[in-house]
Length: 222
Image (cartoon, rainbow, N blue to C red):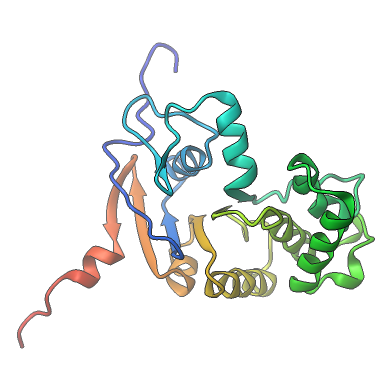
């Protein structure tokens, strides 16, 4: 930036187990979103490698990365990012359209997902006709449409009141209990501690806390 070098992530070495509910916390500028973008195939590191499910995505070409994002990753955003002109059902169907799924099959899949997030009766409503919590639940259903290996949730409760945020986190928790791998990025440490099985904290692109390392420490003799 302006001739200077910004190190967003610095010698980061991290392994996430399949089926984990993994929390990444830190202040703005700590490297959280950069890490999520790397895992989602949106950014490429200047050095190092990113391997997902045995596949090295670091040097993948554009088409391979597009297929990876479509088939292996589900994104949940703070701003919901729903298409305003589409109904809830159509928003959930959209990833299936790009995946080439037949219309009848994708409609059935979208209906099932909206029922799962308790929005079946609201499937015909557009985003402006839904509350913030309902919009986020539509976004979660959309993220799960292609049965991704990983759900990447970037501040998914940032625009919600505490009660609505709690219901969204309960939904993510139940989804994880069904075997879904989830990486949650948040600046709220208590939120991550309350639901994630493992939490790491980033500061200036480095890991400064890892709950797994703390758990592995031997107990202090009394």
